[in-house]
Image (tube, rainbow, N blue to C red; front, side, top):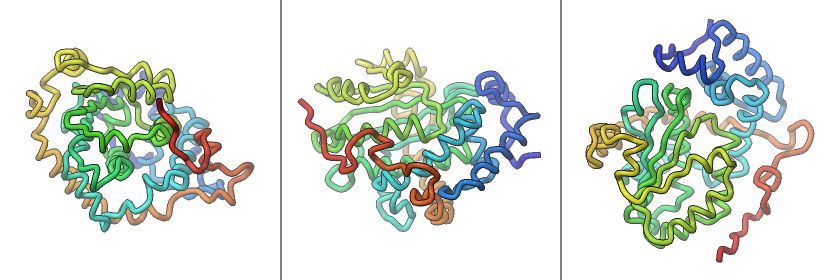
Amino acid sequence: MTDLRPLTPSLSAIAEKELNESKERMPEDLAALRDWILKQPHLKSRTDDQFLVAFLRGCKYSIEKAKTKLDSFYTMRGIIPELYDNRSLDNPKILEILRTGCLLRLPEPLGEGGPRINVSRYGKYDPSRYNIAEVIKVGTMIGEIQMKEDDNCIVSGFVEIIDLSNISSGHFFQFDPVLVKKLAVLGDKALPYRPKGFHFVNCPRGTEKILSISKSLMSEKIKQRFHIHSNYESLLEHIPKQYLPEEYGGSNGVIQDVIDHWEKKLISYTDYFKDEKQYGTNEKLRPGKAVNAQSMFGIEGSFRKLEVD
């Protein structure tokens, strides 16, 4: 027996076919991952079934890959502090950023059993008040709630629409290549989500150059999922209109309702994020070589800004 939320029939079929999920083997797999965690002197991790199964599903039930990814998930907290420090709801910036509507998780997935649809609108936040790391910090909090609650996101993955309307030079200057490198490694090595596509729309002039730099830092698999759309018709070939919010001509929620829903959701997780502070890694206790910024990212620990022509 496991303490897991049952999947819908469509998601269960996808999990079995694409992720190698076996109901019969699941208790054994969960126990193996949990036992490994409890034997690691450097690692303090959550061990509940719903948390652990996200890593098993994200690694297609390779126990060894799940161990590595879960370890990296917690290691990142020490080496990307700008994303993981001060994630308390006592920090007023958390809800302020959410209320700008720059990070949306739409209510309906892309079809029954389909991936979750995210919409990022970075032009909506004021770059003189917040930096991109603070915005992405809020995204990490939303993502961890999805790990616990959103089976579509974990089993079928997500597609992300990046709407660059109203992006200013102040926003652009916050996207330095070192931060992009950190985010690329974080997404590839430490998070159990399954990205199915990144769709850029309303790109201002010059965006292609920045995107090409970002793309060069990512794995081949992720590169193939990058799409830059010159118009909405091109986007709709991938994400039909009905799956977009009403403000985009669709019927997948009203943006303010989406914001209000996630504000209530984040507030309901106040104790969870207070509790999160106790989890992470102690590199002094790690068997073998300690992990640091240079070994994880392959760049200088000082994270000096790179020169971009």
